Length: 441
Image 1 (cartoon, one colour):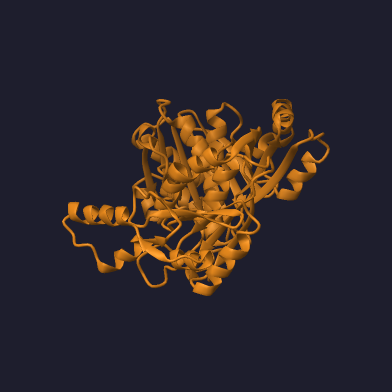
Image 2 (cartoon, rainbow, N blue to C red):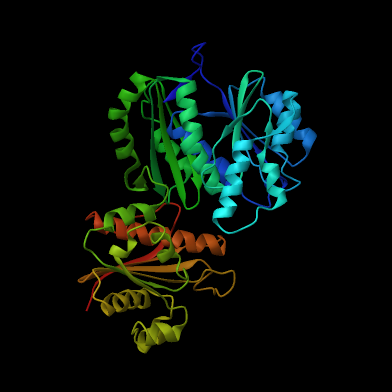
């Protein structure tokens, strides 16, 4: 839903200010900003602007003052810690022309928190009890730094800690309720996401271009290897209702490019299909080095289906652990359709799993040859009767991307089989060198 200002009826303008030298200089990736923007978008709130500023007092004062004339709400992230480079509260006090005062309630809270844990509160933590005189404290149930909000010029500035775990708690438990009670939700909005694999942004855009897009609906493309996410955003009741007819049309147009809907990764889709299904899965990983298993166990409940993942990196481990015949390795090599099929079949048999995936390849940057350049990857999927295998060409990609794309294709093969469709489909941006379907022994 889109929010409007309660008094004026105009759309609320929301901005974000991220603080910290480590964020500004790129020493850390600002995951808070990405998460916050996505969380707001799901509520129908689009950020108008995001700024990043270092730990310099005057720069902070300047940006707080400047943006307070343009936005209705500004989320300020970071700079609430106990050290000398945490300057957000001091800068806000200067911008507002007020003093810093000790918040007795938060001081008592911190003293009790340390006492209950048998620890003495460091003197530096006293700094976190100092808030601008006109600020309203915002509770932080999972950390030592309180948030606060304060009105300056046109805007409410809402200060939050930089620690991601604390930030997310404060947004969900404090900031969203503040928005809901301070601003009116009057315009219906709707967001839907298609996750695609193996198709370029321009190809997808060309496919979609002939479609009649209803008024009030906009499309957005977000490439993030190995995926391209397509966002369908509707503003207003009429546009929201029109999505009921537009989404099936778009889904049909995209065809096999779509690997998940309203999910961030294909691993989540596969997890949901397998979780509590009664089916069991085993994995044999070579060049992916455990990445397949890692992606699945990100989601709670993966123990209901994932039996084991064996990282059989060396040739000898493929032979001794998975039972790949020496003759297959000698005749075809470690990166081959025959070897990958034997790996999948071998790992499936260990615990009699319903399904097995195996990946073997050359992730690089070294180890390739004229016949098998870096980026050559073979993926095998087995059930109790059949093995589907394909060789991909992932050349001119980084080692990490070769492994990431290999996992995505492997999981997509399994996803398609679980949905009772052909596990082998063409990916325009992922050339297939060969594919094979054989009966398992």
